[in-house]
Length: 197
Length: 251
Image (cartoon, rainbow over all chains, first blue to last red):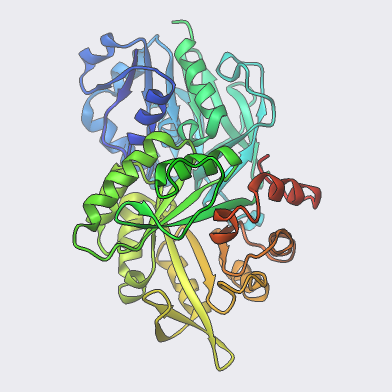
């Protein structure tokens, strides 16, 4: 069963709906004890990374998240929270994955936010099992995680290559919204739920 | 690469879609959930629902509709119509809307854009602008186009971006309903003027109009209603055609 970290960062109704559509049961994680109830953990998130981190800090769940050995999936800002630092609000984050979250540079001739469907270059990873390389996913964000060959499991290009998905041990993150990315997004959520502990 | 988006727009009244829609195999043409699902199956990249309900009960009905759509739909969608306060937007967000679109309320109170962007992020705030040529100048119109303002369209759009709009939905009233094509001159000017995505609206009549707007302007998306509702332009055929013209689309 999937546990959703409930720290008040944006709407999670769409995520709950997507899990229901594909027949996955889920519950909310409000306390450290709640982590024991679930086999897989999702950290959702929209909006401002600095503000989201502050909310996550207020829950007192950060240290427990760092210690998790179960599969964890951060979505969008939830993924950015796994990194060390974000330029958004100059915020120190959980530092689970030693990467930097940066602001897209308008001087690259791109519009910000990066909004819409973007294809991704997929590395061989169980999270993307059955998802064809170059499949398009739905992105909406102004900040991105720097490209890094070690943690990268999928790359997108928008003015420059950036991390569409990362993995470090049991921690996974996707910058796009699988809950809004059609059948491919639903497949990814299903794949995540099948990851072994 | 980022794809150009194709966005069907549905008018909703009292929780039901209005303006006849004649798809084959629709059990209930007025059911927004069924329509939304059909569009998603056809390959629409996003949907816009415009609430034209005039009654006091509107908010409650709309929230219920948004929830049902969010439960079924696996692509993003925007809700517009009658949003004048943070509380309206928050209720829609919590019901599963990905974005909200504001129009007259933003012109009357531009600070609303900034407030919404601060609370929910710029990606949540679409500013819709209805424009019409008056004596050779593009002027902002309000209340569904019935009210002319003294505000020049380009000036307002630039200002909306500065206040924190995440996207501009620009409808040319001169082109809307004509089926003679989008207002490519204005759309190109606007997409060069600002650094946020622009959705073209008004004038789509045939596939070539979509090819034209994407090849000759910098817009990110094109929105249309009747050509999709009446099956005049099937979305899969439209996207294949755009793809043939090397316009990046999600197939």
